[in-house]
Length: 487
Image (cartoon, rainbow, N blue to C red; front, side, top):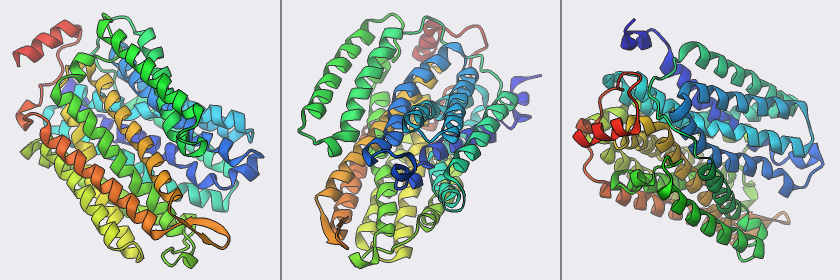
């Protein structure tokens, strides 16, 4: 059967989208548990926070590594492995209350961060050009959709059932995801043969762990503490050596010559800025609506009600993904990215104008989600049009990594702002409304920087979209590079 006809007979796109939503749900479900985990596990609040930090670190490290492995050994195979590791981590969480095992399990679950770049690469290889744009846009939006769905789902389960039940539910969903990918997704014939760059993978892992550990723990340990300063110095040295090694490696983990191209490098910079701007919305909204009414601005909402406040954002992201694909097809992904970042900034302007009324809070958060949909759907399209077909998973993995770094920096920056703007309410320090407004201003300013980065990307147009994948068996780097040069 013709491959194009075969893919039309398979539910490949919804299955991959389910995997992306599941990945985002898995990253979110632990959030409602954090206040109660010290009591449930007997560990300190600082130790419990590692259930989030460990997932962030492992996801940042494994995303480019698994992306490169997918380009070399098969994207479907690596995608199933990532979902299987995520499921195994969820099963371990369901079976224990030991904080050490829980942290290790959440580290395994971080492998799911590679699901989106791997899926986007599969879509490029498998779908005809007329279907590719809308499918990639939907896949990009699953990050926000899953986050909006995961919080209320987890909150309801935690409130009405034993907390282990939540992980049994996600284990079942993960097993379903692995099964569906095995059934509905065929292995892509597009490969980038060669030897896996083990030194490059280890160097990137060490450098990213030092960098993100310093960023995520700086507020708790002190930004000027020897541990944090040492981590940043170690990250600078290790990543500089890694960069030197990658430029000299015959088959590098990350092709830095591609990154040096303005269309690729500026897309990565815009991803970092967009990740920063987007994540502040989720962080601040949840805290703002749960703040006590005694603060004068807080609404005192429960965790379940807080999750429901974020649901409109998820619905908007689902509905707008085909719209963003049409804008990219008509005007180019660069325009879509700039428009999305501008809408994010407009959303924060709404948040600054009124953060006391619930409907205005939801409206502002939804506007930010609208801009995020446009920006996140444009980023992989820019990458797909700028790199050879054999390197799409690894290149998109780096782009997702940049978004992750942006989110980590956003979390640290928002925490630093709110910690320095508190007042005593009921004997406990609570962030002031002024602190929240400063956080919105900071995120909006970063969104405007993302607009500038997007507009600096060299001419992008719908005609830049490459043709479908070459026939199987002819996918070497040299062949792809010659094809790119001749295009």
